[in-house]
Image 1 (spheres, protein in one colour):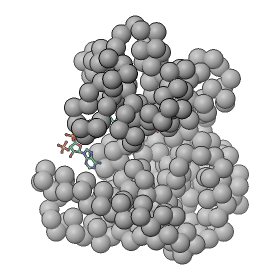
Image 2 (image 1 turned 60 degrees about the horizontal axis):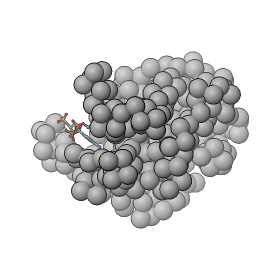
Image 3 (image 1 turned 90 degrees about the vertical axis):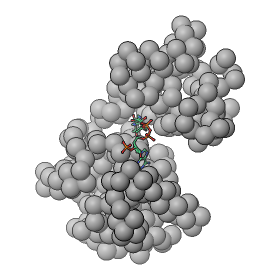
Length: 294
Ligand code: CAA
């Protein structure tokens, strides 16, 4: 089975890494050549972690990297694929444009999957002539580590395509969970209101950054507190998902906290800009609370 992955950012390179690790031939596609080079460097670095942990060998690493080819040409990049996983920027118009092109360039029997975290699969499928073969395949970050794949059935997604994607996810040593196509699906419908509430607690001075995160880490055994997790996901991504929930349901409980809106407007988007609720100028391990919140 040949896989094409569109978008070589954090999610795209993690998805390519994972498919390649389990023996699939992957074509990683991005409009930007430099982004592709950066993605290969990131994948090599993440494979090195696995080598140093002894979960793979140096020979495995070389074989995995050989399974990944890259291109900036969408048309040729998807021509032979059985499955295409789109992991481009989380913007509706961009995804619709990509899926229109995929529908004309991909083989008629190819499955078109999106790694979208909140955009409607039914809407994405509506710009193609193969709604039965369009599906959500929502991986979690960091993809090589996280076990879940949220498999989202659009209104027209067929049983056969859902079965293929469920069993393929198991072959990647993941646990797929089938959900229906409603705003935020399951993961972000539950996660984002929790993160938003944590930001409201900070905004209303219920407690500080470290205190809120410690309560959730030690009190609920979450690996990261909600504010650190928001930084890790990207505050712009959290805001975009909350806007989808708020616009789709029209329920004020999903209204993004004004503090989150201000931080994104000010360009403080978390780890990717080296500052969010925490300051990452000394690296992402052991983050310190950003000066603004001290
Ligand atoms: N590639 C490969 N391996 C990686 C990796 C990567 N990118 N990142 C971490 N690892 C591995 C490490 O090598 C390590 O392996 P071992 O268990 O074999 O030792 C393991 O993962 C743990 O990593 P670290 O020791 O470096 O750090 P940690 O113990 O602090 O764990 C973490 C890091 C896995 C990210 C952990 O903090 C965690 O689980 N955080 C929560 C992540 C989460 O909730 N993700 C979902 C976000 S929501 C989303 O993605 C969807 C959306 O739509 C918004």
